[in-house]
Image 1 (tube, rainbow, N blue to C red):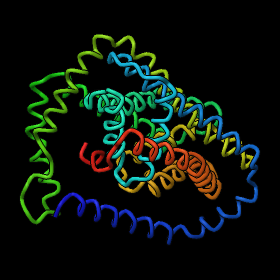
Image 2: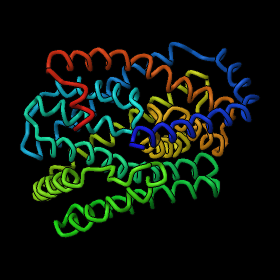
Image 3: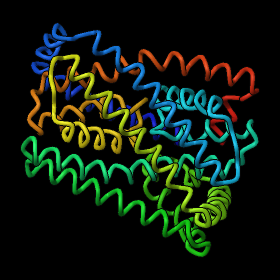
Length: 348
């Protein structure tokens, strides 16, 4: 049984879990529908310019980071790439893997090596999660001064920060040394095969070790180049801060559209938790997992459960409803005009 079958079972288990959640939380969901009557559409329309600013900041991150790698691409082109990536990551069920493949092929058409696009996307997640640490500290300050920072919220924030720091150090530890890369890539097939062995009838490797080793080798060389120009990363880090700020502001505006002013600290922690979990979720855009976690964290911070659920649903549906169709148009335009083959994206 191959990777598709593994993904099928993961999807099946996830959907079953969502079904169980809906059954046990149906009363809260019913109450949530009544809160939609309080929705102010004029406030909600402010989400559009804020999200345009979000995609602009993503484009500027791409541009500033590629400049560190000695590449130059216009902001307007990368703005379209941001919208395309938003579509790919939210529509294709891959836990973000499709985004890596698509960005690699898309930027290759613009003259960027695959290893650089991989490092670009990896660094985007890396720097974004590092910026979460700063925002989590700000969140705890907001909750301490303007609300009640419960033990659960403090535990969530500190645990999330520890996970981010620990994961970042491991990644840097591996990529910074060629010998460690070989040790890691040598142990990776055994680990993956052991984890997926119960899902496969035939004992054969589920990954291409030569391709993984070549990828990490390229990452190491590009890492050395970035390390030599590490001061330039301050611009990239700034844009990741802006990316997160615009998303947090979007959620805050959604609550304003329900005539509620909520503590920004609660929003920050809920957003960080949902995004970390959504990164490894298999269903498109982390649907179900994202909403459930964000609602749960907001409720634990003292927000009414029905309101938290309604605001989260509106944030996700309105945001996707506006920008996914635009991303779809640019995505298919790129497939047609850049000559991108969908099979090429999967193989990348």
